[in-house]
Image (cartoon, rainbow, N blue to C red):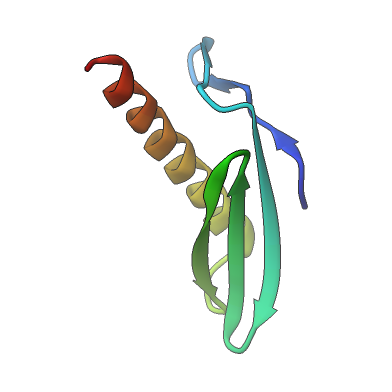
Length: 82
């Protein structure tokens, strides 16, 4: 899975918000005992997440994407408030 465009995301209740980054790519690597999920952003270092084999990979990817979006959004807000 790669090249997922999340420049706009719709959150519950019809709330639509533009996000500060335009594109994220996910690469899933099979590893002993689970998976490594690599999150790549344009012009930023990659983030790595480990998902053990006893976890639901789909649910964990959803959590990873949510975490990444919130982390990047907070970072963009802290830069604009300075």
